[in-house]
Length: 332
Ligand SMILES: *[C@@H]1O[C@H](CO)[C@@H](O)[C@H](O)[C@H]1NC(C)=O
Ligand SMILES: *[C@@H]1O[C@H](CO)[C@@H](O)[C@H](O)[C@H]1NC(C)=O
Ligand SMILES: *[C@@H]1O[C@H](CO)[C@@H](O)[C@H](O)[C@H]1NC(C)=O
Ligand SMILES: *[C@@H]1O[C@H](CO)[C@@H](O)[C@H](O)[C@H]1NC(C)=O
Ligand SMILES: *[C@@H]1O[C@H](CO)[C@@H](O)[C@H](O)[C@H]1NC(C)=O
Ligand SMILES: *[C@@H]1O[C@H](CO)[C@@H](O)[C@H](O)[C@H]1NC(C)=O
Image (cartoon, rainbow, N blue to C red; front, side, top):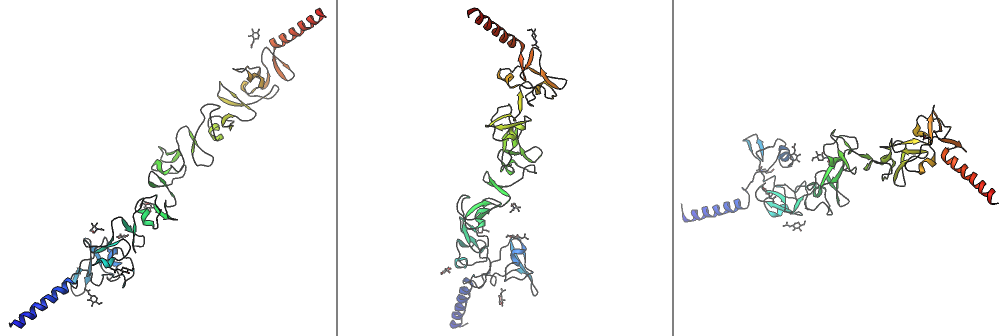
């Protein structure tokens, strides 16, 4: 070979090397997680499939080969579709917000502190759940079942935010697995029967928003009558206190509210027969009794002007009247 021939060979070699270096033969495999990743690439045929993390292409002439990324190298100017995860060779191939060409797997990825946008067209900054958001993924990557709505991360509908997570909302009396699923109802729990309910000694408020403490004693504090009626039949929450309903009175021994039956009224038991004056002393006097289903004056009490009056008092009052008359007579 002549000197000229050698020179030509060297020049051709250099040209080939330049060609290689320029990427004509640099044909990195196309990474994938599953077959649909490969088939979604417009440049690959619909018979491409994913094996061991790279796309494989069956060819009529040569059998199954690693798919070429040359034609699949998706310069955004040429091919529309997702930008994140597309095959790249240079940084400029990933020229979108937060994009970098990852030279480990030869695909566009998001820079540190960025996550792919929901349409994979660019990357969006990582945020905290409280921060303003612009894309669903900013929230969803932080907290499952969350989304971005009006620039705020919120839980998807049917979910609620507790303990930094979005929990499925289980309705009252409906199945649950964790108390957090019930916690949209204040103070409720997931009971042993795995349904949302109020804990022992609490009761669901009328609007279903919370569990309230039930009254243990009459005159316990309350905000709703349900707290009183759970323990005391015929009671109500009046002036933030559990009391017997109107026309009912409380009997301490039986810890119950009984209807007020007056002398002459029908009755079922002694506790119903009631005279307001009896309750002015503590403990109350029982001047009215239920006798053959009728409220009548008890022993040593006499009916005067529709009230049962103590005979002793009556005697005392008549005695004093007598002495008064005697005194008036003597000193007049
Ligand atoms: C394939 O993987 C992608 C993520 O790379 C995922 O979105 C898609 O649902 C997967 N498809 C199947 C059929 O598993
Ligand atoms: C790329 O596409 C061109 C034109 O469609 C084709 O001639 C060439 O063989 C393809 N290259 C590879 C490696 O598939
Ligand atoms: C990146 O894209 C912008 C427009 O979107 C363009 O002005 C700029 O030149 C591009 N940079 C590179 C390195 O391609
Ligand atoms: C680049 O790809 C490798 C391999 O898939 C991965 O481990 C690495 O996290 C990627 N880097 C970035 C910045 O995405
Ligand atoms: C909530 O997240 C789970 C787990 O990721 C998922 O299976 C479910 O479909 C999600 N629900 C909604 C309404 O997005
Ligand atoms: C009625 O009065 C008498 C005499 O004062 C007394 O012995 C008796 O225990 C009283 N009965 C009742 C039921 O209070």
